[in-house]
Image: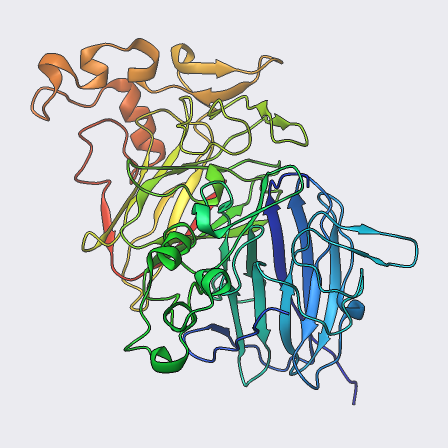
Length: 465
C-alpha cells in the first residue's frame, strides 16, 4: 500500500512600507479562525515579503514543538520561502526590521528583536511586533493575527485550501502612520518604527486584563485597542477581543485573466481603506481582504500597470493616480466595478458599468443558505465595443469601452439636469450594448430593478475575467 503525504499551504505575507531605521506570549483559544483539512500530515507555510525593504521573520514554536528554520531567516523584497511544519505544530511568526547581522548571524534588530541574532532558536520577539499565530490539527487548524504585543509591520494570513472556504485574516494597514503619540516607538533618526499596545506601554491591569480585570466582563476595549481595531478589524487587539464580532465580510479577489492585474479598492466617505487601496494579482492568484462592519465602497481591476519598487507608476486602464496603493482615490473611467454596502442591515452589492468597462468582473456570494444571487459580467465587451466608445492602447488594441456618459458627458447619457429621474432617463443604444452582454450589471444610472442584489452574513468571491 503506497504512503501518501499531504501538504496544505498557508501564505503569511508581510507587506507595506517601513522607515529605515521577551514580550508576553498570550495563547488565546477562543474566537480564533479555524480551518479543517482531512488526511494532512504537514503544513507548508509560505512566508512572503511584500515590503520595499529586507525583513527578517522570526519564528517561535510553542513549548515542546520543534523550531522551524532555527527560528529566523532573511527575506529580501518580493522574496518568498516555504517552511514545512509537522502535524500538530503550534507557534507564532513575526517580522523584524532594521536588522544588522554579521557573517555568524550575530546582531540586533530595531523592531521584533529576539536577542539571539538571526536565529531566534525559541526566543520570543521583543514587543511591539505584529504576530501570526497558529495551532495546527487540534483537531482543526486555529490561526489569528495578533496585535496584543503591538504593531511593527502589516502581516496577513491567506490559507490555500481546496474548498476555498477558509478565510484570510490580517492587518494590511500601516498603523505606524497615525500611532497615538504615547504608544510610538522611534528609531535612531526619530522616525516611527513601531506602535506599542496599551498593555506594553502602560503595564496596568486595565490595559493588560490582569488582576481584577482578568475576565471579559471587566476588561473592555480602550481607545488604544480601538485604534488598532478600526484599521485591522479581523485581528486580536486586546486579551478578550473577538475578531469575528466586528467583521462584515471577507472579499476573496481572484485573477482568472491571462495577464497580471492590479485590483483597486475605494471606500465610501468615512470608511477605512482596505489593503492600502491596491494590490497585485498574478494569473490564477487569489488574495483575501477583510472588511469591517458596515463597510461600503467599490473594487475594480487595473490593467497594463507599471510600478517601480516604491509602488510608483501608472496603469493603462483604471488608474487611480496614486501608484500601486490608491489610498482612497478613485479609478479613472472606463472601469468595471464591483460595489458593496454591507450590513445595512442586509448586504447590497452590484456590478456596475456606469463608468464603462475595462475587464470582466463577477461577484459570487458565499452564504450559509446558498440563496444569494451571483452577479456575472464575464463577457469581453471590448471585442465589439461601439467605435465611438473605444479606448485604445499604445499598439492600437482596444483596452476599454467607455459608457455613453463617459464618452459624451451630456445630460441624456449621464441622467443629469432634466434627465435626472428614471422617467426621463431611459436606456440608450450604448447602455443596451452593455446590458445585452452583462444582463445583471448596471448599464446606466437608473438600471436598478435588474441590477441590485442583497444577501445576509456572506463572504464574497470577486473574480476578474
